[in-house]
Image 1 (spheres, rainbow, N blue to C red):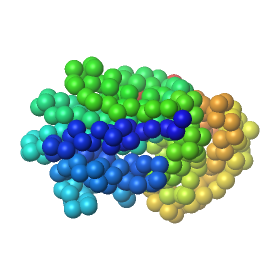
Image 2: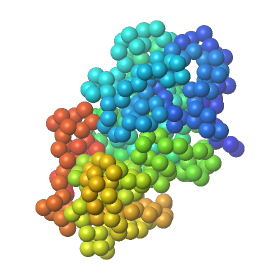
Image 3: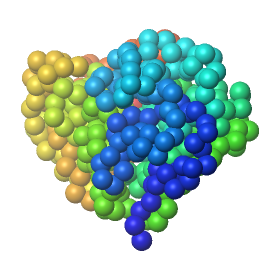
Image 4: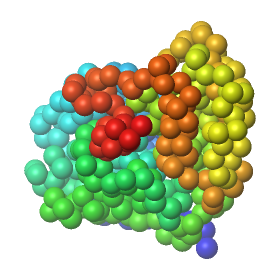
Length: 350
């Protein structure tokens, strides 16, 4: 049977909500089978959307990671960014919620704890729940499957992990919001994914994938991201500023041919390369590194692989390899690698 996303179920029920006024937390990557933008399909059903809230990267995904987002009116609707310069900017102001009856969520998650969109949803859900607004979640499949789980459960809570879940969590974002709603005693309506084979990746079930953020161009990138994003907490380039972020990594001090035999990981080939980032770490500098070619998704473990990569580089380049210093994701005093891993244990073991 054909996959049905939460949007499909909601549109069938749209007549139930036509007397209400909504805000919507969403972005352009939230599409249907025909690549139509979710919010436009909802507006066509005569649901009233008074406000659009947007997550990190902005509605159209034009802002790079960590950049403060400024948005105005999208599709003629008041638009408010929930990713600014401070922690306070992550939560809607009281006046942003006063004149609406409820909030609709429709976002594309990629299955990793430190991907921030789900935490924007959680913060909005908590605030809306306290003032008894209707909360509707339009769920979507986890694009890197809903079975595989990997990495530690975080001890540290932050905007790259507000609640305690593994790095690769194996859930849909609607399932995680449902868990949070139960913990926080919030009533929500979830339109679930139907006819989803959880073991399948998004490109195996015929549903289109479009970039949810500037550095996740396709499923291949999403597969390595739960591990390779850990490099953000170091002085290694995670490939931003190249056309294959997270699949490409390295640094000016690395000779890839020197460490090639020791850095290989199961289910993939790490091919030695040189690259020159056009922005971010080492902009314009020649970096030695690797391109990760995942050959067997079942054998490739992104988190385990990234730990092995970090360990190998640290062993070869003890004086050059460094951990990045704070601030990072609105935290001033905690090491970025600790925020990403969820504790200090990885940094201490390395």
